Length: 182
Image (cartoon, rainbow, N blue to C red; front, top):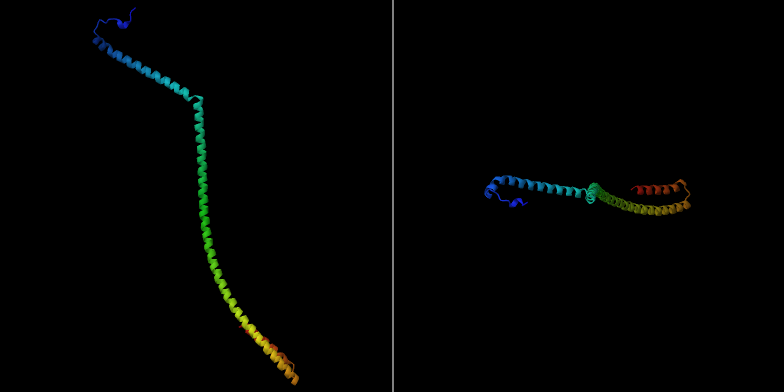
């Protein structure tokens, strides 16, 4: 039997194409569409097989694990940043406290220096008074010694009351106390 394509048509070719052209065009488009669908189906099956392969599943597990680790690290970073901010705030507070304490200490030092200067002035004044009182006591001792010598001379010359002999030391003592009170 001879192939169909070599059969002679009784109609001219232009007419055959006109009549069968629409049918053939629809058939070619249908076949091409079917080929595209089959090709897409094969590619989809291939993709599904690849997507469900062990390596792909391991990759997905690794991605999920990385996401989990990244999330945990982000939480730890946020916590560390909060701790850093808290420590920074405490450092600022401590610095302010230190500055306040240093200002207070400087004020106390200035007040202490002023008090020391006042006390040194008082000590100087008291030393002068002590020196004056010591000089007065020394002068009074000499006078007492002189008076005792006179009394001894007068006692040997004329025996009088012994109560007069006791008055000069009492007088000297009173003069010494009044000098100290000045």
